[in-house]
Amino acid sequence: MEQILFGAPVAEQLDEISKNVFQKYSKDNKKPHLTAITVGDNPASLLYVSRKREKAVHLGVEFNWLKLDTDTSQETLEEVISEESKATDGLIIQLPLPNHLNPEEAINCIPREIDVDGLTSHNLGSLFSDTYKLIPATSLAVLELLNFYNIQTEDKNIVIAGRSRLVSAPLAKILSSKSYNANVSIIHSRTTNQKLFTKEADIFISAIGSAKMYDSTYFKNGATVIDIGISSVDGKTYGDIDTVKIGEVISSRAPFPGGVGPITVSALFFNLSRLIQTN
Image 1 (cartoon, rainbow, N blue to C red):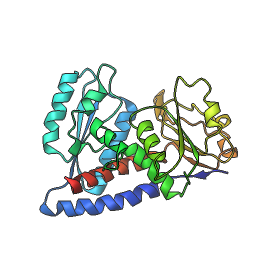
Image 2: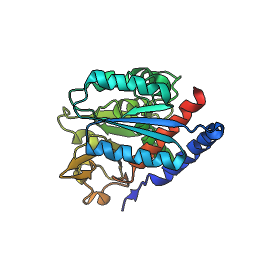
Image 3: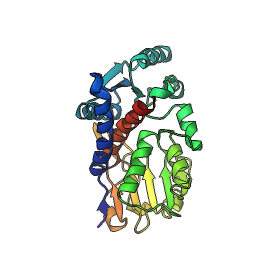
Image 4: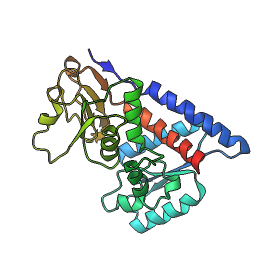
């Protein structure tokens, strides 16, 4: 039977670090401030921002949630980002954005000093040097999960499904660095036979966002599976992994929900604490 890699104890560790920083910062009667911007009513986005708001209350952070209409223009979105950036310690744009908006341009309107998600071109680019200060929150959550449960990456085959800037690129870079020494592959919608890769994976990380995309036939015996994906079908949310019979094959699994998600929220506030300390 597989070991379930719950995110809650990992999140608690990060929260303790962040809380200590926030308490020191709040001594001058000013609480840390985080702003979140959503555009439209994507269920997954609203769910994640709600969790971030709850965490902010728990950690003593003022949370400002700006909900913009689905038809908000690129110009208006960038004006809002520019204005809100003047009075906050951290700012996030919840992805995905509606199709008519350019997320790259929107994210790069965020000053790097308050880019708490670490997704501006400047902060992502810094990952390719030894000077980076922030790791994007979802990527940091995966790394913290691996560290907490002592899952070895040295010379292990790690396959990441998906190629978003939010997860795949940062994770692939860091996991293949000298700190982790993993052999990293990325698969995606144009990968002809995904099982050629997944069947060789010691660690499989899925960030596709397609309900129950991968079942037990995709994995080799003893693999570790980390489910990051989230999608909505008929009003219900699902991860990427079909868990039926999966325990007969793999050795450990970060589930959806309850795996990486809680850590990602805590990692965001950990990044906010880093920004507060360095700015």
